[in-house]
Amino acid sequence: MADIGFWNSLPIHQTFSDSSSNQEASIYTSKPREHTLATQRFFILQTMQVFFSLFLYLLLPPVLGDRFFQFGPCSISMNIHEIRECFGTIKKVIQARDPIRTASILHPHSLHNFQTLDSCCLARSILRFYLDKVFRHCETGSLYINRKISGIANSFLSIEKKFRVCDENMCTCGEEATNKYQQIIRNYEQMDVTLAAMKALGELDILLNWLEAY
Image (cartoon, rainbow, N blue to C red; front, top):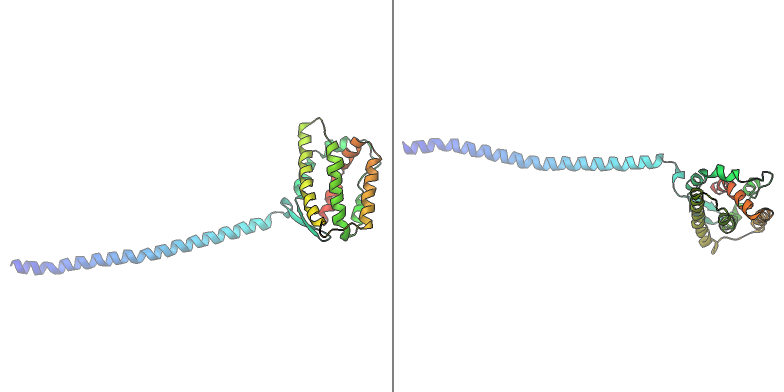
């Protein structure tokens, strides 16, 4: 009877063992599937992030960062938007200090009616003019305004260095560029140094519009 009880219990034990094996097999089978699904989800999320970043990049206006402008043979990167935004905070104050309304230092028509080939020479010359003769004579009694002017001057210095690198190898000064720059100097020298500097700074929009046209 003991033997019969033993053999009768064997199938039950075997069935239980088979059931456990099936459950374990099911568990091990599901793990690769879960891993595959997790990998797929991760890949989809990464792809969506890339496309979303690209979408935002395409929506951003190009003026928010550095852009390349072609001045003759020289391709120069600059952030016109940043300079214009900085100037916009002090523009009214600077222009209010200009008592001479009948004359100007920069003439927009003469700047825009200009050959592209000599633009790199004239652009660098005007930037150097602002660094040497304008910014250093524009100090005011306002620390805030002086900081803004200093920020614009630093931007001009950075751009002028880029022109200098290109100028040494490719940029040439033709007769037209030389004549236009000399006219700017004559306009400046006809006025008091401080007044001329303030007027030139107040006309910064004219220069920025011209630079941005390239």
